[in-house]
Amino acid sequence: MSKDVAIIGVGQSYFTREYPGSIRELAFDAWREAAQDAGITAKDISASVICSAPEYDAQRSPAGVISEYLGFVPAPTFAIESVCSSSTSGLRAAYSMVKAGLHDIVAVVGFQKMSEITSADSQERMGRGSDIQWESPFGTMMPGYYASHAQAHFKQYGSTERDLAMIRAKSTKYGALNDRAVYRKVVTVEECLAKPVVTSPLKVFDCCGNADGSSCVIVANADRAKELCKKPVWFMGLGSGSASVTLTGRSNCYGLTAAMKAAQDAYAMAGITAQDVKVAEVHDCFTIAELMAYEALGFAELGKGVELVREGQNEIGGKIPVNVDGGLLSKGHPIGATGGSQVRTIVLQLRDEAGPMQVPGQPEIGLVHNVGGVGLYANVTILGR
Amino acid sequence: MSFKKFGRKSFASQTKVDAFIDYLEKGEVRGTQCKSCGTKFFPPRADCDQCLSNDMDWFKIEGVGTLVTYTKQGFAPTGFEKDVPYTTAMAIFDGVQIFGRLDGSIPDDEVAIGMNVGVRTLQYDDGQLSYEFIKA
Ligand SMILES: [Zn+2]
Image: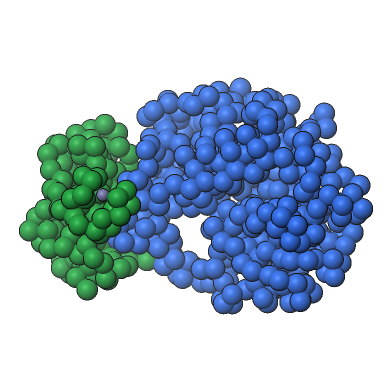
């Protein structure tokens, strides 16, 4: 492993239905924890990357406001957006800047205050989430696209509604252990199956909830990492990809090709295979998304993801523990903050500091899979210690 | 501005392929085909990303296709509430994938991936133009 760029601090706010403060204060919660974790102050930040999905922000161009409130001025700052994968896209930019020698320490701050807009405004924005020229005029919405992938996956591979319910039940088991999660109740497979259908075949518990939240990841070069940090976590591989926005441009609907490309590139850069990954955070905005992630990442062969679910190999003690912090399904999904929160979980796991969620055996390699839109953008990040 | 007439609710008004609307008015769903390299596009495009040409023909979507995937939506974004529930779907006709809605009168238990479908144009009460997949 080339130890040249590290993560030296991580933080996240509580994920909550309605944050009782402004976006700058929300962002500060994550920064405070990350700064204390890294043992640095705002003066150490040489640049910042601010990540959010702007359709939820009342503030135009929030990077400036956030950077000012966190005390980063006069360090350069800018925004990066790829909807739900914004903060790992920001992480990719931070890695590049540090690796290039432009900056020694970069803060990646992700946030979303989804309660900033009314639910009517949210419903209106929901209608513009796909290609507005060709697909939105039919009344499409995000859950519908993932549901269409579930239908296709069921047909192609024989996965079932029960498999999806098992993924949610697992998520709630770990979400109950995570004090930052918005959903803390344990629910059974039968309870998941009994919930009303949102868009067939997805039911209420197959979908993650909206949340307000923030995350912060501090990226540093090797010299600063060794100077400041007892347990730096190193970047091993970064992969990233895209797919067509319109469903009509996709080669199939039972997998996300952008995530497959991102995974291949990340594994190639890291020089490892899926079997080397000991703990993973995958983008489970919907249960079907987690199932497709197992296959995109090579944790299971194509069509065999359900075996991990049915055998419980996706849990602590199994072959590949996935989303043992509750995932998006239980933590909640504050869009711009989500990727950074996933990264925080893996960093804590690799440092053996994940508390009741810790995967035993001191995992050496962890992976983050963060997807924007319905597989429109994908980032896979492999970290090691 | 004629593109404002596309779909239950349109979000776009200006496009170089607004002849798509003229064809819908004539009862046809058409995509574009690059005159220079022959690549077919649906949704229609004004510019070919393969050879950079902007010289396009219009080809008709017709015959029997198959259903690729679908979902019956119990919720809708703003402007679509009164249609709930409705089924959005994708079908493939002679290698060309089309996204749209499925005829709401088909019973749920008859809807399946792989089923044969055709496409027909439709006009809503308010004059908006669209198309849907029907059983074939
Ligand atoms: Zn061409």
